[in-house]
Amino acid sequence: MMNLTLNWIGLKTLVRKEIVRIMRIWIQTIVPPAITMTLYFIIFGNLIGRRIGSMGGFDYMQYIAPGLIMMSVITNSYGNVVSSFFGAKFGRHIEEMLVSPMSNATLIIGHVAGGVFRGMLVGVLVTIVALFFTKLEVQHPLITLSIVILSSTVFALAGFINAVFATKFDDISIVPTFVLTPLTYLGGVFYSISLLPEIWQKVSLANPIIYMVNAFRYGILGIADINITYAYLIVGLFVVGLFSVSLVLLNRGVGIKE
Image (tube, rainbow, N blue to C red; front, side, top):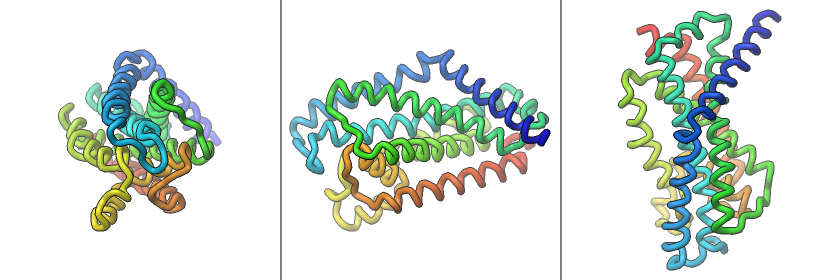
């Protein structure tokens, strides 16, 4: 009972710290993604979209809006955790957390919660921006909310793992640059995979972001290129798998005790 109470107190404190950190430097954490997405809407949606016309039975601007929202959620969830946890390692105050009565699982959940908070906050802001350019009506609210939380959790956990292995600041930019960005752009944000040749459609199914973007698009527009049940299954497996890996790494002290 005492351990449960201590972990609860530790979790609340850690989540509060993460939220305060995000809001204190809002001009770095909240504003830039909104500006970037606004440019995407203007260039891809407004200018290029006029030439493309419709996609999936919707105006091109409407079609890409869910993908752009999800892209902002993914990148900010990832970026928040990788910078926060690596900052704790770099500042050498991660040791204080590790020697506290707080469990390693609580430590992970606290950082992930901060990443999800930032991802959701930016997602709401980008959605508001999107409404200035196009009309969005949520068709399936429960699917929309649940898939965005799960997707945000996946990439917050991925950011945590990146931070565990990172030894210098350059290391926290390698994965976003060479892995996350290509996967995002090839994740069906700007197009339907039905437009691809059959062989490339099958290759695209190896990209987990395809499932997240399409499930979110289904929640808002009611259309998707993939089976929604498969999307939940795959995203759920990633959550369990990445959390398990994070816990094992933390228990072994990888990147911390070395």
